[in-house]
Amino acid sequence: MKYYIETMKNNDLPPDLNDFLNYLETIKGKSLNTIDGYKIDLSMFFRFLMIYKGRSEQNIEFNQVSIKDIDADFINKIRLSDMYAFLSFTEKQRENGTYARARKVAALKSFFKFLTGKAGIIKDNPALELESPKISSRHPIYLTLDQSLTLLDSMDRTYKYYTRDHCMITLFLNCGLRVSELCSINISKLKGDTLNIIGKGNKERTVYLTPAALKSIDDYMKDRVKLKTKTLDGEDALFISSYGTRITKRSVEKIVKKYTQDAGLTDAKYTPHKLRHTAATLMYKHGNVDIRSLQDILGHENISTTQIYTHVDDEDLRKAVKSNPLANLK
Image (cartoon, rainbow, N blue to C red; front, side):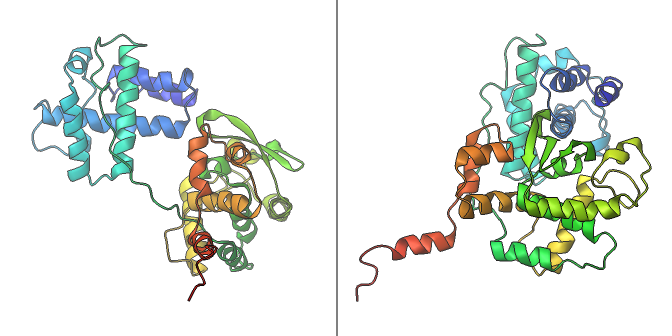
């Protein structure tokens, strides 16, 4: 509700964009992260159009271009060619990769679908034939079992926030949480070996805690009860910052980066999402978890998303090749 009220008061956005963002929250139940992403991408699109169509002031910073006066008449004149021009701009001028441009395509298609159907602002949807850039498949990055153990064992036990940080990384590696899910954990939602969290799309799911996860939480709570919180929200938050407030995603990202680098894991850029991927890979590889169960554990809406976690690594491929009965002929 807080975000809804703030959005309603945002006079810097076109009215139709405000309506769309409110629709995403109140009707579609999208997460605040998703809504913010749409807001950023669509605001960029409108700023580009203001410049592209000669409607903005000269010699003005891109982010200072006003879009608040964009109305239904302006929107009705947007064509498919304008969208491709925008995508070209994001690639060449903003250096957006395929994933970032694909996200913008998704935002445009969703926005104009809303304008055509729910809002009735436009009759013909110009984004209907908008194609997303082809995303090449790539091997996902994850820690091996040995690397995961090295990460946990290398953490400095004398550091005053050791139990908190160790608990966070343990939960990532054991339960495959998203960083937003970890930050949103409330103490009141811990019940025995289960934890109820709000996942992507504001959907609640149950996370089952391993013995290692339970021990790390128990160790941390002995220090957590000594800390003072400065906000009402922070009182129930499991993980709090040095400022006494609920820890932020950015802080967690910095913490993960610090510990992976300290552990000598510099062969890739390891993030909370990479640790989530590690948990899924280890469960599938060492625990014989079937893909449907893995889908439920990770909170994926579509099983196609889960399938990226079932990749076969190089060692498996090496063993498969060596199993050929002709492999040892000389």
